[in-house]
Amino acid sequence: MNDEKEDLYRPPAGSMEQLIRENNNLKAENRRLNQKLIELEEDTQASLSAISHELRNSLTLLVGSVQLMEQDYPDVASTRYWSSIHSDLSHMQAFLQDLSSFKSLKALVPHRRLCDLTAFLRDVYHNCQTWFDGIHRRLILSCPKTHSILYADTAKLYQAITNLIKNGLEALGHEGTVSLCLREATEDETRLLGTETTVIEVKDTGVGLSAKQQEAIFQPFFTDKANGTGLGLPIARNIVESHGGRLCISSCPGKGSVFTILLPSLPNAVK
Image 1 (cartoon, rainbow, N blue to C red):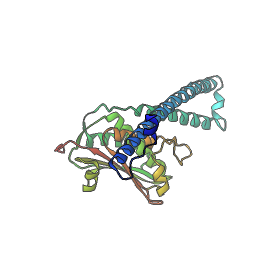
Image 2 (cartoon, rainbow, N blue to C red):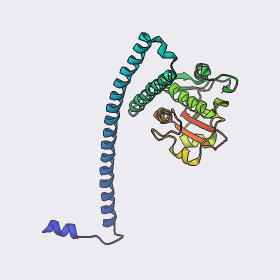
Image 3 (cartoon, helix red, strand yellow):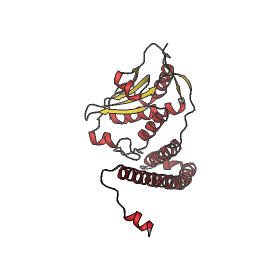
Image 4 (cartoon, rainbow, N blue to C red):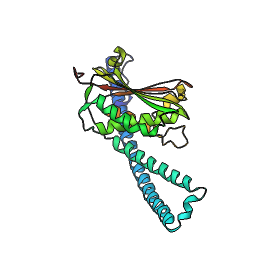
């Protein structure tokens, strides 16, 4: 009977007792929603793993069959649609690789070490040069003469930056420029990160993005490209955020895009 009375009792509106009760109710609801999100995340990861496993097995068999067919019937390579088959298989392999990276990045702990960022970006630039013809489509590097030092997982950071460069290249069409730039942070950028900040920019002179596209660009599987996986940019953002950084975009249709990486830098580490 007493329990029923307690359930029926309502504290006076605006009283401290009412505020405490509402606060406790909000906390309980928040815990329930957080648990639901955890369960949904676990279900999603399990589903992605199962799908990835099945696709990888099927793709391995398909690639093997294509290779055997080329060995037994060499003339098949000159048929009309054979290059398209190879292209589609390569696309599927890239998609599964991106999917695997995306899953593993959910629990990513960067293996950081001291990195000379200037030298690192020069290596990225030279390795990515082969993607550009150097005439109609060019990759440009802009780095200060000083050397910026920071702690970073260079393998993961390499993946993030090359994903952004690939994205810029795909946005160019038949001609244009992608620029890789290391520069000093503005006051606003430093304030955004809350610490001394190193800035890496990847700019392109491509088609640009609408405001609606920019809102969705980092969502997994969002893409407006025929052969895009929709995972390259989410992977890049996850890597940057795992380093305590931010990945921002500024774009305008017809005027290209700028992806800005903000990373915590070592105090007094530019020399």
